[in-house]
Length: 222
Image (cartoon, rainbow, N blue to C red):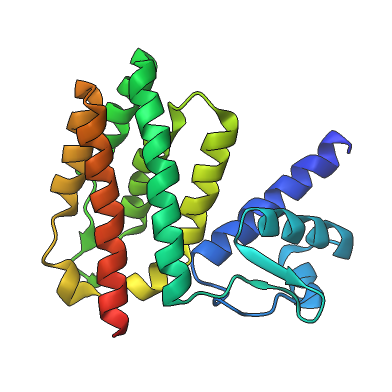
C-alpha cells in the first residue's frame, strides 16, 4: 500500500475508532457504508478496510446477515471481558515489573503524575468525567501495559481495554455509586507498588481496580 494511502487509512481508522469509543455510534448500531463514506470523506474500499481492522480489535462485529455493527454489549459479556482483562493486563504488568526497565518505570511515574494532576470532574458538568482526565487515565493504563516486552501481549491487552471502553456510557450512570470509590488512591496504589517492584501487590491492586469498575457498572444496571 502506498504511503499516502496508508496514511489516509490510518487517519480514518483513528477518527472512526475515536467516535465509537466516544459513543457517537451506539453499541449494536449498524455501520452502513454510505453514511460512513460521507462522514469521513472516504471510499467504500477504504471504509471496509477500516471496519475490518476495527473488527480485529473487537470494537466492531462483522456478520454475513447484518454486515458491520458496533460490538453489542451485555452484562455477561462485560463479566467475561473483565475476567479476561484481569488475566491479561495483570500478566502484562507482572512482566513489566519483572523486567525492571528504568525507562518504563519513569513513564509510569510521569503518566501517573499527569493523571493525579488532572481534574476528574468539571464543576459545570459534574456528572461526566472530563476528556482531559479520560486521556490521562488511558495514558497511565497504557504505560502499565507497555513494559511487558511482548508486542503481542501488549496488543491483546490494549484491544481488551478498547473493548472495555464500549461500556463507558453505562458507567456514566453510576455517579452515586462512583462517589463511594477513590480512583486517585486506587491509581496511586497501583503506581507505588509498580515502582517499588512489588509485582504481587501491584497486580492485586490492578485487578481490584478493574473489578470494582465492573461491579459498579453492573450494580447500576440492576
